[in-house]
Length: 561
Ligand SMILES: [Zn+2]
Image 1 (cartoon, rainbow, N blue to C red):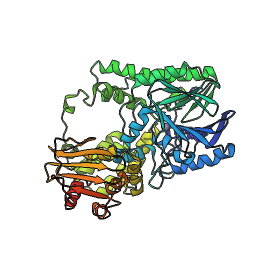
Image 2: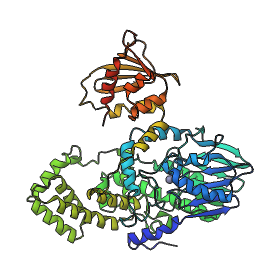
Image 3: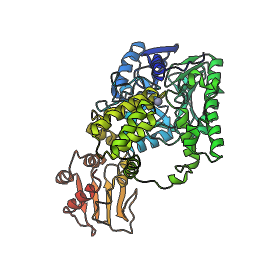
Image 4: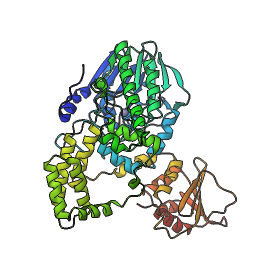
Protein backbone atom coordinates (compact mmCIF):
# COMPACT_ATOMS: atom_id res chain seq x y z
CA UNK A 1 0.00 0.00 0.00
CA UNK A 2 1.55 3.34 -0.97
CA UNK A 3 1.89 5.84 1.82
CA UNK A 4 -0.01 9.08 1.86
CA UNK A 5 2.26 11.96 2.87
CA UNK A 6 0.20 14.27 4.97
CA UNK A 7 1.08 16.13 8.13
CA UNK A 8 4.46 14.87 9.51
CA UNK A 9 3.13 14.86 13.06
CA UNK A 10 0.11 12.77 12.01
CA UNK A 11 2.41 10.39 10.15
CA UNK A 12 4.68 9.96 13.16
CA UNK A 13 1.67 9.41 15.41
CA UNK A 14 0.42 6.71 13.08
CA UNK A 15 3.88 5.17 13.06
CA UNK A 16 3.41 4.51 16.80
CA UNK A 17 1.32 1.50 15.79
CA UNK A 18 4.60 -0.22 14.94
CA UNK A 19 5.68 -0.14 18.56
CA UNK A 20 2.59 -1.27 20.46
CA UNK A 21 3.93 -3.38 23.31
CA UNK A 22 3.39 -7.03 22.49
CA UNK A 23 5.10 -10.34 22.01
CA UNK A 24 4.58 -11.73 18.55
CA UNK A 25 5.06 -15.47 18.21
CA UNK A 26 6.41 -15.62 14.70
CA UNK A 27 6.41 -19.40 14.64
CA UNK A 28 6.39 -21.96 17.43
CA UNK A 29 9.20 -21.26 19.87
CA UNK A 30 10.30 -18.00 18.22
CA UNK A 31 8.96 -14.85 19.83
CA UNK A 32 9.64 -11.20 19.15
CA UNK A 33 9.03 -8.68 21.95
CA UNK A 34 8.19 -5.23 20.64
CA UNK A 35 7.69 -1.99 22.54
CA UNK A 36 9.52 -2.90 25.76
CA UNK A 37 12.42 -0.68 24.85
CA UNK A 38 13.74 1.01 21.75
CA UNK A 39 14.64 -2.31 20.14
CA UNK A 40 13.05 -5.72 19.98
CA UNK A 41 14.23 -8.61 22.05
CA UNK A 42 13.86 -12.03 20.51
CA UNK A 43 13.35 -15.27 22.41
CA UNK A 44 14.19 -18.55 20.72
CA UNK A 45 13.20 -21.62 22.71
CA UNK A 46 15.53 -24.58 22.54
CA UNK A 47 15.47 -28.13 23.92
CA UNK A 48 17.27 -27.56 27.15
CA UNK A 49 17.60 -23.82 27.21
CA UNK A 50 16.69 -20.60 25.48
CA UNK A 51 18.44 -18.08 23.27
CA UNK A 52 17.97 -14.33 23.51
CA UNK A 53 18.82 -12.14 20.57
CA UNK A 54 19.32 -8.53 21.69
CA UNK A 55 18.72 -7.44 25.24
CA UNK A 56 17.37 -3.86 25.17
CA UNK A 57 18.89 -0.66 26.55
CA UNK A 58 18.70 -0.94 30.31
CA UNK A 59 18.20 -3.27 33.23
CA UNK A 60 14.68 -1.92 33.64
CA UNK A 61 13.59 -2.58 30.04
CA UNK A 62 15.18 -6.02 30.10
CA UNK A 63 13.44 -6.91 33.37
CA UNK A 64 10.12 -5.93 31.82
CA UNK A 65 10.58 -8.17 28.85
CA UNK A 66 12.04 -11.03 30.88
CA UNK A 67 8.95 -11.11 33.07
CA UNK A 68 6.82 -11.74 29.99
CA UNK A 69 9.29 -14.10 28.33
CA UNK A 70 9.31 -16.19 31.52
CA UNK A 71 5.56 -16.71 31.12
CA UNK A 72 6.29 -18.30 27.74
CA UNK A 73 9.32 -20.31 28.80
CA UNK A 74 11.39 -20.12 31.93
CA UNK A 75 14.18 -22.40 30.75
CA UNK A 76 17.66 -20.99 31.45
CA UNK A 77 19.16 -18.72 28.83
CA UNK A 78 22.09 -20.61 27.39
CA UNK A 79 23.07 -18.03 24.80
CA UNK A 80 22.69 -14.34 24.18
CA UNK A 81 23.43 -12.92 20.77
CA UNK A 82 24.26 -9.26 20.33
CA UNK A 83 23.46 -8.29 16.76
CA UNK A 84 25.71 -5.25 17.25
CA UNK A 85 27.20 -2.89 19.79
CA UNK A 86 24.42 -0.30 20.14
CA UNK A 87 23.23 0.30 23.67
CA UNK A 88 19.62 -0.63 22.86
CA UNK A 89 20.82 -4.17 22.11
CA UNK A 90 23.40 -4.84 24.80
CA UNK A 91 22.63 -3.01 28.04
CA UNK A 92 20.07 -5.49 29.37
CA UNK A 93 22.11 -8.69 29.06
CA UNK A 94 22.80 -9.39 32.72
CA UNK A 95 19.08 -9.69 33.38
CA UNK A 96 18.81 -12.77 31.16
CA UNK A 97 22.14 -14.40 31.88
CA UNK A 98 23.36 -16.91 34.41
CA UNK A 99 26.97 -17.91 35.08
CA UNK A 100 27.17 -20.24 32.12
CA UNK A 101 25.38 -18.14 29.51
CA UNK A 102 27.46 -17.55 26.43
CA UNK A 103 27.32 -14.10 24.87
CA UNK A 104 27.95 -14.12 21.13
CA UNK A 105 28.87 -11.18 18.97
CA UNK A 106 31.14 -10.19 16.15
CA UNK A 107 34.72 -9.54 17.27
CA UNK A 108 34.35 -5.86 16.36
CA UNK A 109 31.50 -5.41 18.83
CA UNK A 110 33.75 -5.51 21.85
CA UNK A 111 36.25 -3.20 20.20
CA UNK A 112 33.60 -0.63 19.29
CA UNK A 113 31.85 -0.83 22.66
CA UNK A 114 35.05 -0.10 24.47
CA UNK A 115 35.58 2.96 22.28
CA UNK A 116 32.10 4.43 22.55
CA UNK A 117 32.07 3.84 26.27
CA UNK A 118 35.08 6.06 26.69
CA UNK A 119 36.52 8.50 24.18
CA UNK A 120 33.37 10.26 23.06
CA UNK A 121 31.09 9.18 25.87
CA UNK A 122 30.26 12.66 27.24
CA UNK A 123 29.09 14.11 23.95
CA UNK A 124 27.38 11.04 22.56
CA UNK A 125 25.39 10.73 25.78
CA UNK A 126 24.11 14.26 25.29
CA UNK A 127 23.45 14.01 21.58
CA UNK A 128 21.82 10.60 21.82
CA UNK A 129 19.52 11.99 24.50
CA UNK A 130 18.46 14.67 22.03
CA UNK A 131 18.14 12.34 19.06
CA UNK A 132 16.01 9.80 20.91
CA UNK A 133 14.12 12.39 22.95
CA UNK A 134 15.08 10.67 26.18
CA UNK A 135 14.18 13.74 28.24
CA UNK A 136 10.89 14.32 26.46
CA UNK A 137 7.47 13.02 27.26
CA UNK A 138 4.13 13.23 25.49
CA UNK A 139 3.44 16.70 26.88
CA UNK A 140 6.81 18.07 25.79
CA UNK A 141 6.44 16.67 22.31
CA UNK A 142 7.77 13.14 22.18
CA UNK A 143 5.91 10.95 19.70
CA UNK A 144 8.36 8.12 19.18
CA UNK A 145 12.01 7.51 18.39
CA UNK A 146 11.60 6.48 14.78
CA UNK A 147 12.48 2.81 15.17
CA UNK A 148 11.03 2.30 18.63
CA UNK A 149 8.73 3.98 21.09
CA UNK A 150 11.41 5.37 23.40
CA UNK A 151 15.01 4.80 24.42
CA UNK A 152 14.43 3.91 28.04
CA UNK A 153 17.75 5.23 29.20
CA UNK A 154 17.88 8.41 31.20
CA UNK A 155 19.87 9.28 34.32
CA UNK A 156 17.96 6.84 36.50
CA UNK A 157 18.29 3.77 34.29
CA UNK A 158 20.90 1.16 35.00
CA UNK A 159 23.10 -0.69 32.59
CA UNK A 160 23.21 -4.46 32.74
CA UNK A 161 25.82 -5.01 30.08
CA UNK A 162 27.88 -8.15 29.75
CA UNK A 163 30.95 -8.31 27.55
CA UNK A 164 30.74 -10.90 24.77
CA UNK A 165 32.27 -14.25 25.67
CA UNK A 166 32.35 -15.80 22.19
CA UNK A 167 33.18 -13.72 19.16
CA UNK A 168 34.00 -14.45 15.54
CA UNK A 169 35.80 -12.37 12.97
CA UNK A 170 35.21 -14.30 9.77
CA UNK A 171 32.27 -14.12 7.41
CA UNK A 172 30.02 -16.44 9.38
CA UNK A 173 29.74 -18.67 12.40
CA UNK A 174 27.59 -21.77 12.61
CA UNK A 175 26.14 -22.64 15.96
CA UNK A 176 24.10 -25.43 17.38
CA UNK A 177 22.55 -24.11 20.54
CA UNK A 178 19.97 -26.05 22.51
CA UNK A 179 19.01 -27.95 19.39
CA UNK A 180 18.64 -24.84 17.26
CA UNK A 181 20.85 -24.36 14.25
CA UNK A 182 21.92 -20.76 13.80
CA UNK A 183 24.19 -19.18 11.22
CA UNK A 184 25.57 -15.82 12.26
CA UNK A 185 26.59 -13.75 9.24
CA UNK A 186 28.79 -10.72 9.51
CA UNK A 187 26.65 -8.20 7.64
CA UNK A 188 28.05 -4.69 8.14
CA UNK A 189 25.36 -2.13 7.56
CA UNK A 190 23.98 0.11 10.26
CA UNK A 191 27.20 -0.71 12.09
CA UNK A 192 30.46 -2.34 11.08
CA UNK A 193 29.99 -5.14 13.59
CA UNK A 194 26.44 -5.98 12.54
CA UNK A 195 25.48 -9.63 12.35
CA UNK A 196 22.29 -11.16 11.04
CA UNK A 197 21.17 -14.59 12.15
CA UNK A 198 19.75 -17.17 9.78
CA UNK A 199 17.95 -20.23 11.12
CA UNK A 200 18.11 -22.53 8.11
CA UNK A 201 15.76 -25.20 9.49
CA UNK A 202 12.94 -22.73 10.01
CA UNK A 203 14.10 -20.30 7.30
CA UNK A 204 13.95 -17.39 9.70
CA UNK A 205 16.18 -14.36 9.22
CA UNK A 206 16.90 -12.17 12.22
CA UNK A 207 17.75 -8.98 10.37
CA UNK A 208 19.25 -6.96 13.22
CA UNK A 209 19.27 -3.23 12.37
CA UNK A 210 20.02 -3.64 8.68
CA UNK A 211 16.36 -3.21 7.86
CA UNK A 212 13.48 -1.72 9.85
CA UNK A 213 10.27 -0.03 8.86
CA UNK A 214 11.80 3.41 8.36
CA UNK A 215 14.35 4.94 6.02
CA UNK A 216 17.81 3.67 7.01
CA UNK A 217 19.99 5.83 9.17
CA UNK A 218 23.11 6.18 7.06
CA UNK A 219 24.24 8.81 9.53
CA UNK A 220 22.93 9.33 13.06
CA UNK A 221 22.73 12.91 14.29
CA UNK A 222 23.77 11.73 17.75
CA UNK A 223 27.23 11.58 16.19
CA UNK A 224 28.49 8.65 14.19
CA UNK A 225 30.71 8.28 11.20
CA UNK A 226 28.85 7.72 7.96
CA UNK A 227 27.76 4.13 7.66
CA UNK A 228 29.19 2.75 4.44
CA UNK A 229 26.27 2.59 1.99
CA UNK A 230 28.07 0.17 -0.32
CA UNK A 231 28.70 -2.23 2.53
CA UNK A 232 25.11 -1.90 3.72
CA UNK A 233 23.81 -2.66 0.22
CA UNK A 234 26.04 -5.75 -0.01
CA UNK A 235 24.71 -6.99 3.32
CA UNK A 236 21.12 -6.43 2.18
CA UNK A 237 21.96 -8.45 -0.93
CA UNK A 238 23.28 -11.25 1.24
CA UNK A 239 20.11 -11.08 3.32
CA UNK A 240 17.63 -11.06 0.45
CA UNK A 241 19.42 -13.94 -1.24
CA UNK A 242 18.79 -16.10 1.81
CA UNK A 243 15.16 -16.08 0.63
CA UNK A 244 13.84 -16.21 4.16
CA UNK A 245 10.23 -17.09 4.87
CA UNK A 246 10.24 -15.07 8.11
CA UNK A 247 12.00 -11.79 8.74
CA UNK A 248 12.46 -10.61 12.30
CA UNK A 249 14.15 -7.22 12.49
CA UNK A 250 15.47 -5.86 15.77
CA UNK A 251 13.20 -2.84 15.37
CA UNK A 252 9.60 -2.74 14.14
CA UNK A 253 7.40 -5.74 13.39
CA UNK A 254 8.35 -9.09 11.86
CA UNK A 255 7.32 -9.94 8.32
CA UNK A 256 6.13 -13.25 6.89
CA UNK A 257 6.25 -14.38 3.26
CA UNK A 258 9.21 -15.19 1.08
CA UNK A 259 8.29 -12.92 -1.82
CA UNK A 260 7.28 -9.96 0.28
CA UNK A 261 10.48 -10.19 2.28
CA UNK A 262 12.61 -10.45 -0.85
CA UNK A 263 10.89 -7.50 -2.47
CA UNK A 264 11.04 -5.35 0.65
CA UNK A 265 14.75 -5.91 1.16
CA UNK A 266 15.26 -5.20 -2.54
CA UNK A 267 13.45 -1.88 -2.35
CA UNK A 268 15.36 -1.00 0.80
CA UNK A 269 18.76 -1.63 -0.77
CA UNK A 270 17.67 0.17 -3.94
CA UNK A 271 16.77 3.28 -1.96
CA UNK A 272 20.22 3.34 -0.38
CA UNK A 273 21.82 2.86 -3.78
CA UNK A 274 19.65 5.55 -5.35
CA UNK A 275 20.63 8.23 -2.83
CA UNK A 276 24.27 7.14 -2.89
CA UNK A 277 24.57 7.15 -6.69
CA UNK A 278 22.63 10.33 -7.32
CA UNK A 279 24.50 12.21 -4.61
CA UNK A 280 27.80 11.24 -6.17
CA UNK A 281 26.53 12.31 -9.59
CA UNK A 282 25.83 15.75 -8.10
CA UNK A 283 29.10 15.83 -6.17
CA UNK A 284 31.03 15.23 -9.36
CA UNK A 285 29.40 18.30 -10.87
CA UNK A 286 30.99 20.32 -8.08
CA UNK A 287 27.79 20.80 -6.11
CA UNK A 288 27.92 21.27 -2.33
CA UNK A 289 25.61 19.41 0.08
CA UNK A 290 23.64 22.63 0.66
CA UNK A 291 23.09 22.99 -3.07
CA UNK A 292 22.08 19.35 -3.56
CA UNK A 293 19.67 19.41 -0.64
CA UNK A 294 18.43 23.00 -0.93
CA UNK A 295 17.64 22.62 -4.62
CA UNK A 296 16.11 19.17 -4.05
CA UNK A 297 18.36 17.56 -6.63
CA UNK A 298 18.18 14.12 -5.04
CA UNK A 299 14.71 13.08 -4.00
CA UNK A 300 13.30 9.60 -3.81
CA UNK A 301 11.27 8.77 -6.92
CA UNK A 302 7.56 8.16 -6.28
CA UNK A 303 7.73 4.38 -6.08
CA UNK A 304 10.42 4.47 -3.42
CA UNK A 305 9.02 7.52 -1.68
CA UNK A 306 5.69 5.85 -1.09
CA UNK A 307 7.04 2.54 0.13
CA UNK A 308 6.07 1.85 3.76
CA UNK A 309 9.62 0.78 4.61
CA UNK A 310 11.15 3.97 3.25
CA UNK A 311 9.27 6.57 5.22
CA UNK A 312 11.80 9.06 6.56
CA UNK A 313 10.90 8.55 10.21
CA UNK A 314 14.45 7.72 11.25
CA UNK A 315 17.12 8.36 8.64
CA UNK A 316 16.24 10.74 5.86
CA UNK A 317 17.42 11.70 2.40
CA UNK A 318 18.98 15.12 3.21
CA UNK A 319 21.16 13.74 6.00
CA UNK A 320 22.11 10.79 3.82
CA UNK A 321 23.27 13.21 1.12
CA UNK A 322 25.47 15.02 3.65
CA UNK A 323 26.75 11.69 4.93
CA UNK A 324 27.63 10.39 1.48
CA UNK A 325 29.38 13.67 0.68
CA UNK A 326 31.32 13.45 3.92
CA UNK A 327 32.26 9.84 3.32
CA UNK A 328 33.80 10.59 -0.05
CA UNK A 329 35.04 14.17 0.23
CA UNK A 330 35.28 14.85 3.95
CA UNK A 331 34.35 18.07 5.75
CA UNK A 332 35.17 20.63 3.08
CA UNK A 333 32.12 21.46 1.00
CA UNK A 334 34.14 23.02 -1.81
CA UNK A 335 32.62 26.44 -1.21
CA UNK A 336 35.64 28.69 -0.78
CA UNK A 337 34.24 30.63 2.18
CA UNK A 338 33.92 27.30 4.01
CA UNK A 339 37.70 26.90 4.02
CA UNK A 340 38.00 29.14 7.06
CA UNK A 341 35.08 30.36 9.11
CA UNK A 342 34.70 33.07 11.72
CA UNK A 343 33.90 31.97 15.24
CA UNK A 344 30.12 31.74 15.66
CA UNK A 345 30.11 34.79 17.93
CA UNK A 346 32.02 36.91 15.41
CA UNK A 347 29.73 35.72 12.66
CA UNK A 348 26.71 36.58 14.82
CA UNK A 349 28.08 40.05 15.54
CA UNK A 350 28.68 40.68 11.83
CA UNK A 351 25.23 39.41 10.92
CA UNK A 352 23.51 41.51 13.59
CA UNK A 353 25.43 44.64 12.60
CA UNK A 354 24.75 43.99 8.93
CA UNK A 355 21.07 43.66 9.76
CA UNK A 356 21.00 47.10 11.37
CA UNK A 357 21.51 46.09 15.00
CA UNK A 358 19.94 43.55 17.32
CA UNK A 359 16.54 45.28 17.63
CA UNK A 360 16.19 45.47 13.88
CA UNK A 361 17.34 41.87 13.41
CA UNK A 362 14.93 40.67 16.09
CA UNK A 363 12.08 42.41 14.26
CA UNK A 364 13.25 40.72 11.07
CA UNK A 365 13.33 37.36 12.81
CA UNK A 366 9.75 37.93 13.99
CA UNK A 367 8.66 38.76 10.44
CA UNK A 368 10.47 35.70 9.11
CA UNK A 369 8.55 33.62 11.66
CA UNK A 370 5.26 35.16 10.50
CA UNK A 371 6.22 34.37 6.92
CA UNK A 372 6.89 30.75 8.00
CA UNK A 373 10.58 30.98 7.05
CA UNK A 374 11.50 28.98 10.11
CA UNK A 375 15.03 27.98 9.13
CA UNK A 376 15.95 31.58 8.49
CA UNK A 377 14.28 32.58 11.76
CA UNK A 378 16.36 30.00 13.56
CA UNK A 379 19.56 31.30 12.04
CA UNK A 380 18.73 34.86 13.08
CA UNK A 381 17.67 33.80 16.55
CA UNK A 382 20.80 31.71 17.04
CA UNK A 383 22.88 34.75 16.07
CA UNK A 384 20.91 36.96 18.44
CA UNK A 385 21.43 34.48 21.26
CA UNK A 386 25.16 34.95 20.80
CA UNK A 387 25.01 38.69 20.28
CA UNK A 388 21.80 39.99 21.86
CA UNK A 389 23.09 43.57 22.27
CA UNK A 390 19.99 45.46 23.46
CA UNK A 391 17.28 42.85 23.04
CA UNK A 392 15.90 41.11 26.09
CA UNK A 393 17.30 37.55 26.07
CA UNK A 394 14.01 36.14 27.29
CA UNK A 395 12.26 37.55 24.20
CA UNK A 396 14.91 35.93 22.02
CA UNK A 397 14.48 32.65 23.88
CA UNK A 398 10.74 32.75 23.44
CA UNK A 399 11.01 33.20 19.69
CA UNK A 400 13.77 30.61 19.64
CA UNK A 401 11.52 28.03 21.32
CA UNK A 402 8.52 28.83 19.09
CA UNK A 403 10.74 28.40 16.04
CA UNK A 404 12.01 25.03 17.26
CA UNK A 405 8.41 23.91 17.81
CA UNK A 406 7.51 24.88 14.25
CA UNK A 407 10.54 23.14 12.80
CA UNK A 408 9.69 20.05 14.83
CA UNK A 409 6.17 20.09 13.42
CA UNK A 410 7.53 20.02 9.86
CA UNK A 411 10.10 17.32 10.58
CA UNK A 412 9.37 13.83 9.32
CA UNK A 413 12.30 12.22 11.14
CA UNK A 414 11.64 11.42 14.78
CA UNK A 415 15.36 12.04 15.37
CA UNK A 416 15.09 15.58 14.04
CA UNK A 417 11.86 16.24 15.87
CA UNK A 418 13.29 14.99 19.15
CA UNK A 419 16.38 17.11 18.69
CA UNK A 420 14.34 20.31 18.18
CA UNK A 421 12.01 19.58 21.07
CA UNK A 422 14.86 18.68 23.44
CA UNK A 423 16.82 21.82 22.52
CA UNK A 424 13.68 23.75 23.34
CA UNK A 425 13.70 22.38 26.89
CA UNK A 426 17.40 23.11 27.19
CA UNK A 427 16.91 26.72 26.08
CA UNK A 428 14.15 27.08 28.64
CA UNK A 429 16.63 25.85 31.25
CA UNK A 430 14.35 22.95 32.16
CA UNK A 431 16.85 20.20 31.55
CA UNK A 432 20.58 19.72 31.71
CA UNK A 433 21.70 16.58 29.92
CA UNK A 434 24.57 14.71 31.50
CA UNK A 435 25.15 11.20 32.77
CA UNK A 436 24.71 10.59 36.47
CA UNK A 437 27.69 9.78 38.68
CA UNK A 438 26.39 6.23 38.90
CA UNK A 439 26.31 5.86 35.14
CA UNK A 440 29.86 7.18 34.85
CA UNK A 441 31.04 4.69 37.46
CA UNK A 442 29.23 1.88 35.65
CA UNK A 443 30.85 2.85 32.38
CA UNK A 444 34.32 2.93 33.84
CA UNK A 445 33.88 -0.31 35.76
CA UNK A 446 32.82 -2.16 32.59
CA UNK A 447 35.67 -0.78 30.47
CA UNK A 448 39.09 -2.32 30.13
CA UNK A 449 41.90 -0.69 32.07
CA UNK A 450 43.58 0.02 28.75
CA UNK A 451 40.61 2.10 27.61
CA UNK A 452 40.45 3.83 30.97
CA UNK A 453 44.03 4.95 30.42
CA UNK A 454 43.52 5.72 26.77
CA UNK A 455 40.81 8.20 27.67
CA UNK A 456 43.37 10.32 29.53
CA UNK A 457 44.92 11.98 26.45
CA UNK A 458 41.60 13.38 25.23
CA UNK A 459 40.88 14.81 28.67
CA UNK A 460 44.29 16.41 28.99
CA UNK A 461 43.96 20.14 29.63
CA UNK A 462 47.16 21.29 27.96
CA UNK A 463 46.49 24.96 28.67
CA UNK A 464 46.48 24.32 32.40
CA UNK A 465 49.52 22.09 32.48
CA UNK A 466 52.53 23.52 34.25
CA UNK A 467 54.51 20.33 33.97
CA UNK A 468 56.00 19.85 30.52
CA UNK A 469 57.48 16.40 30.82
CA UNK A 470 56.59 13.48 33.02
CA UNK A 471 56.76 9.72 32.72
CA UNK A 472 54.72 7.44 34.92
CA UNK A 473 54.82 3.67 34.79
CA UNK A 474 51.80 1.76 35.99
CA UNK A 475 51.77 -1.87 36.99
CA UNK A 476 48.47 -3.50 37.81
CA UNK A 477 49.27 -6.43 40.06
CA UNK A 478 46.06 -8.39 39.59
CA UNK A 479 46.32 -8.61 35.80
CA UNK A 480 50.07 -8.03 35.53
CA UNK A 481 49.40 -5.39 32.87
CA UNK A 482 52.00 -2.67 32.44
CA UNK A 483 51.45 0.77 30.96
CA UNK A 484 53.51 3.87 30.54
CA UNK A 485 52.00 7.33 30.44
CA UNK A 486 54.26 10.03 29.15
CA UNK A 487 53.56 13.72 29.07
CA UNK A 488 55.55 15.57 26.39
CA UNK A 489 54.92 18.20 23.70
CA UNK A 490 51.49 18.94 25.15
CA UNK A 491 50.23 15.44 24.54
CA UNK A 492 49.84 12.39 26.70
CA UNK A 493 51.25 9.22 25.21
CA UNK A 494 49.81 6.01 26.63
CA UNK A 495 51.66 2.80 25.76
CA UNK A 496 50.78 -0.70 26.88
CA UNK A 497 54.38 -1.53 27.70
CA UNK A 498 57.33 -0.07 29.56
CA UNK A 499 60.19 1.36 27.57
CA UNK A 500 63.10 -0.05 29.54
CA UNK A 501 65.38 2.69 28.13
CA UNK A 502 63.44 5.29 30.08
CA UNK A 503 63.60 5.84 33.79
CA UNK A 504 60.15 6.95 34.86
CA UNK A 505 59.60 9.85 37.24
CA UNK A 506 57.17 7.64 39.10
CA UNK A 507 56.59 3.89 38.99
CA UNK A 508 53.27 3.00 40.52
CA UNK A 509 52.30 -0.44 41.68
CA UNK A 510 48.54 -0.81 41.94
CA UNK A 511 47.04 -3.83 43.63
CA UNK A 512 44.03 -4.13 41.37
CA UNK A 513 42.68 -2.44 38.27
CA UNK A 514 39.54 -1.74 40.23
CA UNK A 515 41.44 0.59 42.58
CA UNK A 516 42.66 2.70 39.69
CA UNK A 517 39.14 2.86 38.29
CA UNK A 518 37.87 4.04 41.67
CA UNK A 519 40.51 6.77 41.67
CA UNK A 520 39.49 7.80 38.16
CA UNK A 521 35.83 8.21 39.11
CA UNK A 522 36.88 9.92 42.36
CA UNK A 523 35.34 7.22 44.50
CA UNK A 524 38.74 6.96 46.17
CA UNK A 525 41.53 9.49 46.54
CA UNK A 526 45.12 8.55 45.69
CA UNK A 527 45.98 9.43 49.30
CA UNK A 528 43.51 6.87 50.63
CA UNK A 529 44.83 4.28 48.23
CA UNK A 530 48.35 4.96 49.45
CA UNK A 531 47.31 4.81 53.11
CA UNK A 532 45.56 1.49 52.51
CA UNK A 533 48.67 0.20 50.76
CA UNK A 534 46.57 -0.31 47.63
CA UNK A 535 49.21 1.55 45.72
CA UNK A 536 52.92 2.04 46.22
CA UNK A 537 55.21 4.50 44.47
CA UNK A 538 58.85 4.39 43.49
CA UNK A 539 60.99 7.23 42.18
CA UNK A 540 63.48 7.41 39.31
CA UNK A 541 66.13 5.68 41.40
CA UNK A 542 63.76 2.84 42.13
CA UNK A 543 63.42 3.75 45.81
CA UNK A 544 60.15 3.82 47.71
CA UNK A 545 58.77 7.30 47.29
CA UNK A 546 55.43 7.89 49.01
CA UNK A 547 55.91 11.67 48.53
CA UNK A 548 55.32 10.98 44.84
CA UNK A 549 51.64 10.91 45.67
CA UNK A 550 51.59 14.71 45.34
CA UNK A 551 52.91 14.44 41.81
CA UNK A 552 50.30 11.83 41.05
CA UNK A 553 47.55 14.08 42.36
CA UNK A 554 48.90 16.99 40.30
CA UNK A 555 49.03 14.72 37.31
CA UNK A 556 45.40 13.65 37.77
CA UNK A 557 44.33 17.28 38.03
CA UNK A 558 45.51 17.77 34.46
CA UNK A 559 42.54 15.69 33.38
CA UNK A 560 39.92 17.39 35.51
CA UNK A 561 37.05 18.75 33.43
ZN1 LIG B 1 18.96 -0.68 17.35
